[in-house]
Length: 417
Ligand code: BGC
View 1 (spheres, rainbow, N blue to C red):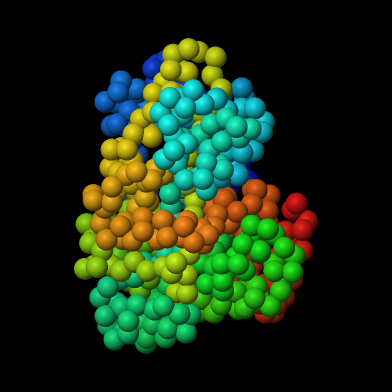
View 2 (view 1 turned 90 degrees about the vertical axis):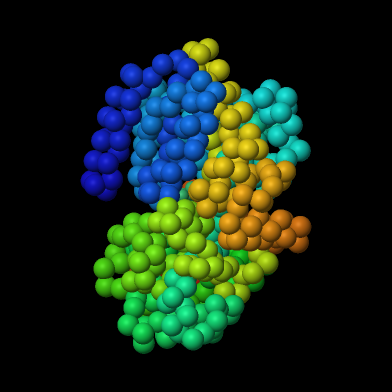
């Protein structure tokens, strides 16, 4: 707690300093894109804004999944000094809109026809009370596995498509003397892995448990099985996993120190930044058993109410720049995600990006597109945080078995609502 407070105080001090340097035509952007691949994507956004005459005041708050960024945001708003634009996920956007803190982007959205090109699953979080309150920059998904190609080839096995095949590959990698699973022990990372495991037990089950929050699904036999699988995965990580940042776990796979990482497609940004090529150096697959379904999250930029006309104009400029189709292509090629508009060509994307776009469209058509619990698109933050606690405790062996963890999950989610 104290460490968290220290980080927040430091972040707020940095933010306060950057604020005073801002011009009216600048946007101050609070985000958590601090890894190598993420920073490269920020560069694309910054350059795009600069080309339109909008300056950038950077307010990075490190921490994958954005928990620390959201804490820093709350401090800024409480101090009466909201940043201009904020990277935000799903239910957090709706919470802030409900507080009346967000600028209304409807005039811009209507003039530019956003409602015709942004999928309904995203609009659910970009709009509140019939008004546009955020501009979506991408669609990420969490049910991915990133595998070092040489390490996979060394197993003599094919890329796994079922849980049993996955375990066989992990066992073989262990025999071959590498860490099978590159993982960072942070609650949001374990929750990201768990999105994939729960989805692999069925889309209907995922929806009942994580979207509908049905107590029977949360505490039942399938959830017990999901936790047993999570507990099994714990046996494939190295001794130093605790607290490791996600991008360092990606680096282990990139370097061949680890065999694979179960992570959202922001991980691809790290592989690309390291000069790695899909199909040659690494393989991207859907979490075994989840091909055809997608658990998504979308980074959106919400604009906080400002009284200064110059700042308001800068917000509109930023929103327009984000929604520009050419930008959506250029940005997402680097970020690892796919465009938030349905009218952007897949031409510039690598094979994993093309697969990501095709998978998303297919899941959307088939009713198999679900919001990610780990990344704030299945349930509000209070519920999400309750799942983090139980998932991490289960990963760390704090329950006798999967059934005990499932019972704890049902209880924690009930208490959080
Ligand atoms: C965001 C990504 C980000 C990742 C790791 C996710 O919640 O949607 O944009 O790269 O966290 O920081």
